[in-house]
Length: 209
Image (cartoon, rainbow, N blue to C red):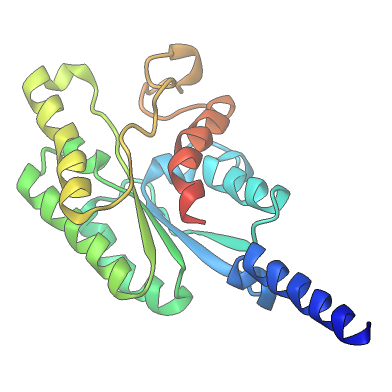
């Protein structure tokens, strides 16, 4: 009887270990690093109202033991991100890297081949450091012309496909076309739109957690 009880207890313990992710068993907290521009830095908002801060709240509420580090800088480009990322990776050793860059490249007319190469290098740096990577794409305003807007958007799709990286094709989906959700500059979302941005990200992010 005693032997049978021990066998059942061992089986239950084994099921518990299999059901829980490794970090849960060890009580380990891991980092998510967000490398972005003003859309992730929360331009014009209370820092606690941006989608990155809301991500930290959601992770906590759903029992995920991750710390979100927001390394986003308003006005940043893919070239700027390449300069900043190595130090951030060395400092935080993130389990996940979210890249939200490229919008300012497009607004400044950076050659698309340069932007494409920079995104590939950013993804490579993240993976070389042991992080899983999620790429967030944006769209340019239509006044840039349909040909350029389409080619710009395709950069994200092409990089994601070639590097086998999960992609959120349009971070501002359901927001950018609604003036009531955008700030006066027509580029940055208001605080009440941030939850929708998080929802757009969450669908692709959750399988990586």
